[in-house]
Length: 565
Image (cartoon, rainbow, N blue to C red; front, side, top):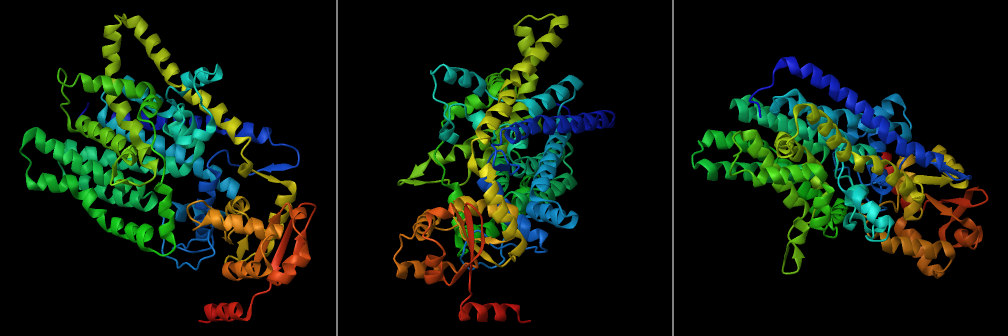
């Protein structure tokens, strides 16, 4: 690995990265086109293929930014919540949506495009910093942009009944790289909240590596600035930064037993400067009376280490092979050693929920912490390709053909990912609206105010949060406290199964402005709502009814106080 990037190769690498970003985005758009084409008559495509619940939760904050707010409250609950949460990424996306009057669907497309460009540019900067040869940089960038795992092999085995790859397994699916967003290509396709911060994280790594190469404090300071920006975009990456840097310092200290205090301080600077953010996020996710429920998103079932490792694909194989050769061929540069530590630590963090103490998980955070693992695997593994060519005794004229074949095989998983996720996305109800639902939501969007609370099922609540700036009493499995219990109570309320007294208590507890009822023919009718909830039917079509709740005198008084300067 090189010690400094030459200016002559920065521009071509930059242009290649831009081209790859555009191509990756265009290819991932195929999934969206397939789902749109499969939309059934009487339905409308919302513009999402996957992760509809989580993306809708992002929009509950993005809409607030578009409305002019800089701090966010939890809009996916009926509980009173102060504006205490800040996220730089959602703030910028929301400001753009409000400034340019973009629709939620167009905003998502622009966000995805930006994520593709920023992520691949981030990797390109890192590659040009550490890889000295053109073929290495081009190969690494193609592996990063289009790579996948061995899920395609398991999909074939699943098709003949040898492996069970049902989509319901999620993180425990043997073909995990076809379900989750392990690889950068999948991150671009599924969720810009993965890809865009991933690119900023790689910029942080690039600056940190430049510090290691030059030993100049300014690079560590710049890395610390970017680390703090990263923390304001995706808190998960603070965990990675604050785990990787001390591990790297410890590794280097054990290797040489000679590290001046100034060097150690510079190496730890990005982690140390993010500690105030750790304190802030501890308050948000552990102490705040409403936001603390969000931390339940970390309660995920353990992922199979075996299937996950297969999901890393050829990059993982090359990385392990390089590790096995480390005695014969030591890691001589700090960049190589940093990448090894980074990969091992991220792998350990991802599987940290396997560890328990007295029956309690030691680590309880989202597996999203594994998002940036492929970059170090590729940058270490690409150096093994000449060794592989030598082992196979390939003459020079055949090496280019072999490299092309390697890249094609490496991309099989991504090619299948497009159709696999399109097929799944076309049967997920959250990605669509019935025409009757769309009409009702269009009415609601014209009449609601940002402080209004809409009571509906959690299924409808998430889509309401995606489409308009409003509070949803039920909207997300983690952001909405006690969502399962509330959803059951709402279902009984709509069906008329709750006794009148308990139904009245339910409405007084939630205090909605509107009640959105899908499949309205299943309910007793408007009379039931008028008796228990002071409700007036303000919209109805063949399958949806919306009821407006007359505010109580206490609610009116609270609103008057809130509006008084």
